[in-house]
Image (cartoon, rainbow, N blue to C red; front, side, top):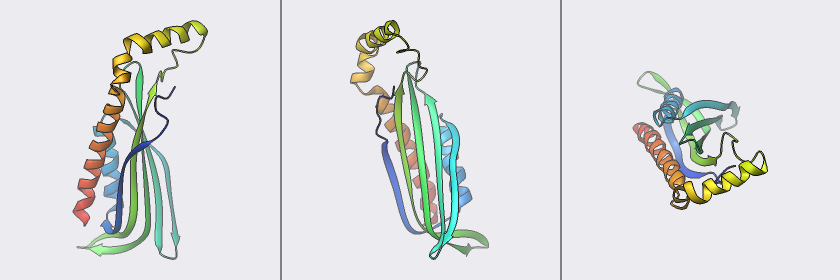
Length: 163
């Protein structure tokens, strides 16, 4: 049962930026793993159009917050108008792009609750009394937001080296 269906987060937009795609990929992966998430590359696509190369990546991560909640992270990278350039003998790309970073909390991610009417009853009790403060104080959302901001800052810091 997802606690929050909407994936919101941070966005990094860049235009005519010089980047090392391999280094960017490794940086994103490291940022995900450093925050305690399990890393999965869901999608990697590339093609060439009349303006240059186009590439799309999608990364997923999940991290157990506690027995009750799981954080699901998603990072989408879209690169376009990428053209190869040589910077101090190293082949890099120059172009435009966007990196979207977001996470949602999944409650009862192990499906322990809600399999029958008795477990649903106990789940409602658990939410109402034991996990009430965490849910009302948006404890899980705060953890997600902190992770997203930390990952965003790490990625942005690295990308700014190529301004």
